[in-house]
Length: 544
Image (cartoon, rainbow, N blue to C red; front, side, top):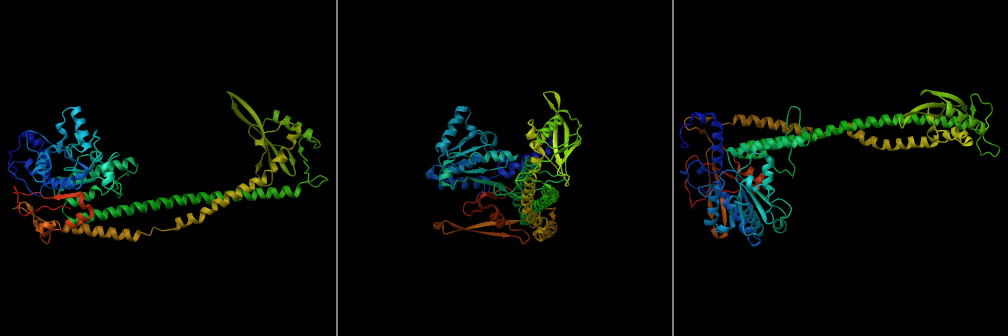
C-alpha cells in the first residue's frame, strides 16, 4: 500500500520504529510517504496556511508575528517538505510576501540568527518556522507574537512548554495592547492517527512529572486529578477527541469530574481527620488547664484563709519556719537560705527545708555545664495542697538577706496571675471547639453525586465495549465508520458558509464535542486512504 519494498533483515529488527516513523509522517502529510500523493484542502498544510493567513490579516496593521513549530518535515532547501509547502500556500493562495515568511534553519551563523530575531521583533518577518530544538529555546522574538502553531506534538511536555514560551512571556507588546494580553496557541491534529498516541504519551509524562514535583505520587496508582485554568484541557481529553468517538470524550469528561470529586472528598477527609486531631488536642489541653485551675484555686483559697497581717491591717506577715532555725527574723532567715543555696546537695531531688502558712518550702540541686565544667545551682520552690510548685525569680535565691527572706511570699503572689493565664488559655481554646465539632461531625454532601457519576461511567464503559465495531476482513477497515463532510458555499459576498455532516447512524458525531471543548484551539483533519485530488470548487475543509 505504501509502495515500499519488503523489509530487510536489519529493518525487521526495527520495524516498530519504522512503523512509528511512517505513522508520524502520515499524520503530518501523506506526501512525506510518497510523492504520488497530491495536495488536499483538508490536510494540515492547508489548515495551517488558512489559520496563519487569518491571523496575518487580522493583525496586519500592527505587524504581528507568528511561530510555526514542527519537529518533522522541517525546512530543507533541496527537497519537498510540509513547511515549505505551507509557505508556498501562504504566498500563492493568500498573497503574503515571501520575505516575510522565514525558516530558522536559514540562519547558519549566530549573527544571521540574531538578525532574524531582530527582524521578527521589528515585524519585518511575520511568520517564522522552526523545530523545537532550533526555535524552542534561546529565541527572544516575542515582542509582536499573537499566535503559536503546532503542526505536531513533541515527545516531552517540557518541549511543548518551551515552544509556547516563545510568545507567552514578558515583553510581548502587541499581544498586550491589541490581543487582550493573550497569545493564541493552535494545535493541529488528525483524527485516528499517531497524534492521539503522542498526546496520550504527553499526558502520562506530564501527569507523572507534576505529581512527582507536588509530592503527591501514590504508592500504587497515579491519579489523573483535574486540571485548573492554568493547565487548560488535559491530554486525556485530547486523546478522546482525536479518537473520533464522542463516547470516549464523554468518558474522559466523566473521569475528570470523578477525579475532581474524589480529590475533593480526599481533601474533606484529610480536613476532617486534621480537625478531629486538633479537637482532641484542644479538649486535652482544656482538661489539663482545668486541672491546673482547680489546683491553683485550692492553693489560693488555702493561702487567703491562713495569711496573717500586721497591726496596720495591710502588711502581710512572713512567718517563715526553716528547719534548724528558731524564730522568723528576716535577716536570720535570709542568711540561712543563702547558706542552703551555697551548701545544699539534693542530687536532683526536692528536699523540704521548712514551711510558710502550711505550704512546704523546697530546694533542689540542679547541675549545669558552664564552659566545660559542671556547676551546681540550688533552686527554691513552695508547694501547697494543690501539689503545684511555685517559684520567684526562677527559683534563684537573692544574696541580700532581707530580699531572700521574702522569696517564698513573693512566689505565692504569682498564683493569681498564673490562674488568670490558664483561664485565658481555656477561653481561647473553647472558641474553636464548636467549629471543629461541626467539621468532625459533618458528612461530605457530594457523595451521592459521585456515586451517580461512577454508575454513569460504568454504564458508559459497557456501551463503549458493546459499540466496538467488528473489522471487515475483506476491506481491512472498521465497518460503519465511513463519513463525508461537505460544505456548501452560500452568498460569497457575505462570506458565509454552511457545513453539513453526512454519516452512518453508527458513526458518532464528534464535531460538537470538539467545538464545545476546544473552540479554535484544535484543528481536526482527516487522512484519506488513497491519494486524494485537490478539489477547487467544493471545499471539504472545516475549522473548529
